[in-house]
Length: 124
Image (cartoon, rainbow, N blue to C red; front, side, top):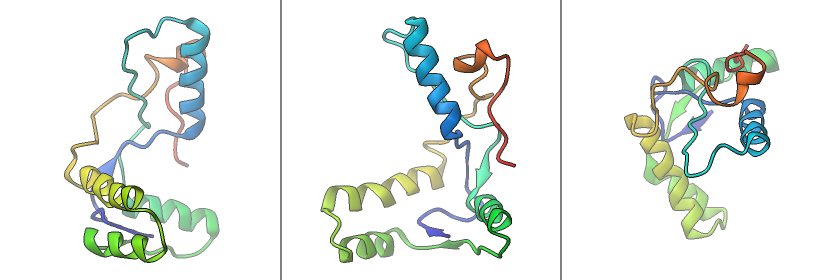
């Protein structure tokens, strides 16, 4: 696993199924007008944590490497990716790296999963 995020920088990534439940609940309940709904995961995970989880699922060692943002950009452009998405990915990774896009939250319990009385899914 490699990216422009330091191995110990954390982010509260939401499970895609939780995101789907958030969207469905907001659409069904219809009480979301002009509201920003923050969907986060159960816990903040680092890139190294994510690599370990992928390795566990794949039954193999998955290392985690920090790659300078310019190197990520150069690699993406070399594949023929258009400028705007190639520039967006390392910029987004750097925002996670600095914590700018890593809000503290107790997860999705108060928003979409209230009907199930469950918090965000665990990464395990």
